[in-house]
Length: 321
Image (cartoon, rainbow, N blue to C red; front, side):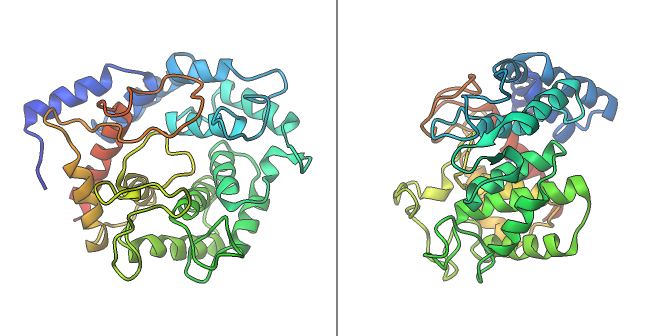
């Protein structure tokens, strides 16, 4: 695996720091090892400046974004909460508590007439709701219990179950993130941990982007995307929404404190290979939808979000390999 010369690495770090507080605090914490006080001070600005403040200001009087709990335009309550989690909005901040209180008290699922944090019926959506709910300290135990009961025999999850008895990378990563956030926020639970570890093995047994047989997955059977030149799960995106890719899988493993082994080596090498001559990573695919704020550059351009995530994954792998 190639490494960045020190001067190029310094240039990339400075480029990352010359950005939004949501990126800066994560660079300071994950790449620079800044003190807890320095990190907390920068993180607090997410609620009052830049992308985070813009998103918070868009919340309606009814507690929702986009007027709904969820939609296909990616500007709904669930999608904005996913972004705020990615930005690292402090759950204990006054702004977060106010926003989450409005959601908890007023936002319901259309068609079910149930509270937002009770979730709905698809595990990919419930995984995302569970992840943001747990991150922001909400009671999502009902969602977690439902997800535990929907785990398939191969260890993963699929929104097309029970018609499909095989798990989906896309749904599985959404559920794994929810179970991990639940454990991190509310403490270990043997049943939750056991299910998460089984789901984690689903990814590792497939080396994060292959079939269990070892064959390469070229097309995502959910949407038919992917080519032999760019297999579906190797295209790096931000935000990912419900889509899986190898960087998202590696980020989950890093966040879960998993010690890297040879089963992740190929995926890590693929991520490293996407670094350009300036030491940055491009946005390789931008999923359709109405982005409520500008998060990054256009598809094909160097992406601060993907560069940040790639650098900390490479650091995690190097430290544990």
